[in-house]
Amino acid sequence: MSVPGSNISVAVFGAGYWGRNLVRVFAELGCLAWVCDPDISALTELEKNMPPVRCSLDYRDALGDDAVRAVVIAVPAERHAPIVRQSLLAGKDVFVEKPLALNIDDANDVVQLAKERERILMVGHLLRYHPAFVRLKQLVDDGELGRVRYIYSNRLSLGKIRREEDIMWSFAPHDISMILALTNEKPESVIATGGNYLHEHIADVTTTHLNFASGIRAHVFVSWLHPFKEQKLVVVGDKRMAVFQDTEPWERKLLLYPHNIEWHDGVPVPDKRDAVAVDLALGEPLKAECEHFIDCVSRRTTPVTDSCEGLAVLGVLRAGQESLLAGGKSIDMRSSAEPRSFFVHESSYVDEEVTIGNGTKIWHFCHVMKNSSIGRDCNIGQNVVIGPDAVVGNGCKIQNNVSIYKGVTLEDNVFCGPSMVFTNVYNPRANISRMDELRPTLVKEGATIGANATIVCGVTIGRYAFIGAGAVVKCDVPDYTVVAGNPARRIGRMSESGEMCKCDKF
Image: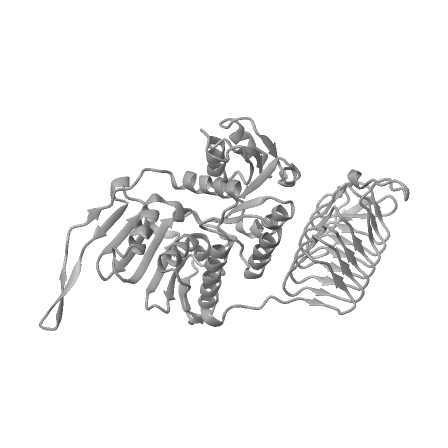
């Protein structure tokens, strides 16, 4: 089977619980070119049931394939923002599963980057593409329910329990997305309450209340500690009431209740009517969502659940989290927007088409060159050159007299000591241009590079690795490994907190 735009090659990042469904659908649509997942057993299992595609343990392999036009990200939520960022910088259109990010600053950064690079950024709010919800929204927009008074949703089950995010961030984005679509407005205030039963700092049950300027009220009840599965959205209008219940058979997924309230001698009397099932076109919501993404990539149109919609949902989630931590305090959404801000010293230069995250400080005599990207909360010391086309993650510290050339990527929380050196061409000559022989260098999360060290191009520095001062690194350094000398050799291992491990063999 193929659809218009099926000549577009797609890479799927993540082949786990949900990613395998995306792999299946994009394969059916004739678009699947790559599947990337660090779990080789997941790739092996998928290869048994899908057409021949390229597989890799590292998603960067697919980002380096010029034939890939779009990527689909279904990895754990805490990895969404950095992988979206790297994908956009690689010139790919992006479909990322909900939520867009776990941090509003990260989300703002990638949304701004997508705009600057003119890339499509779509968020996977699946139920917006469900035929029952599409029909429900049409009924609301056409006035069939009259004036909407309130909306409530229940999304309840026993599991799947997550440890990287609480129940509100895991379950509620779908319902918040539907509520915002039905009301066509953002809430003025948000109140959330809940309970932590399995983990001290992770909520297992939450109820979130949304208050809108139009007078509409909504609430979202989510739990993964519930005796049975329930997925129900109720919309109450002054003419009719509608119930979208996804656990029901297809012919009863969307019901209209033409109930009415009549007044007799000043007393309201309910006039109850039988439910009327709404005819729906059969269709798999996930396939409709994936087809929509491919169509947007092909036609260069804006997705229904675009990055702005993703930001709106994230704003409600953030307000709900703030309220939850404050014991149910009402959070005013009208004043919750935070200005984007970073600092650049007046002696430094920042070219056009550069992305800089909130909280980053760039000090004296620096130059950030075209198409480079710097994350949030970075500290860039004096006389630093970045770019062009370089990537610096969040929370990085780059000390004085460092140049980060094209082809160099720093993941989050990397430390670069003073006067350390990156190269990007292996055998440079002043009179010979060899930029077409550029070798990319990757420094993974949390790594430390000591003063005056040299990192020869083409290597990967592992997570939380430690490069001693003055070392010359000519080959890959594994995670948590300490190296020193010229050429650099392993001398130990180090923890994430920077403590040397007491072991002799590596």
